[in-house]
Length: 172
Ligand SMILES: *[C@@H]1O[C@H](CO)[C@@H](O)[C@H](O)[C@H]1NC(C)=O
Ligand SMILES: *[C@@H]1O[C@H](CO)[C@@H](O)[C@H](O)[C@H]1NC(C)=O
Ligand SMILES: *[C@@H]1O[C@H](CO)[C@@H](O)[C@H](O)[C@H]1NC(C)=O
Image (cartoon, rainbow, N blue to C red; front, top):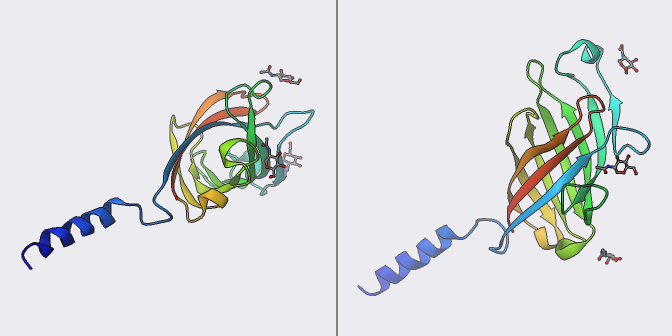
């Protein structure tokens, strides 16, 4: 009986250390997200705006739909394509530039081909590091929980085109 107690404590400690969601795997993925608004082939399109959007200093009310390329390296033209970021972002900050990101990272090549990761979160784009929630996934990322960190790699103020470095930390 006395020997059973430490064993139970060990089991309890092991259960607490493993992630609550999924199969106990942890995956870190680094990739680059290319938000292309410029012609000739934009992958981010503005679909709606409010009456106040044009005069708002934060673009409040603007809704953008994306099908943005994801690549292994920072250069869109020469880096290995990994998939697409499909979804929307909404300018949801009235006094501060802050997007609400709502998107799936759809892997179409490499180790995770065929799987998706669902990301939702607040993206104050002028902050150095923005953290968003990984709220789920499919394929190898079923039951995913975790977080994403975004850092702007390049941003063209004139066209609005941006390349963003993303790190995903996923329990699944
Ligand atoms: C806001 O600006 C866009 C793009 O310049 C223009 O197409 C649209 O008509 C403007 N909307 C309003 C309400 O002024
Ligand atoms: C990538 O290619 C496009 C079109 O071919 C070109 O306009 C753009 O400048 C290139 N970008 C880089 C970073 O080389
Ligand atoms: C990704 O998977 C699809 C479906 O199985 C396959 O057709 C495609 O060739 C794969 N892509 C790469 C780059 O491996």
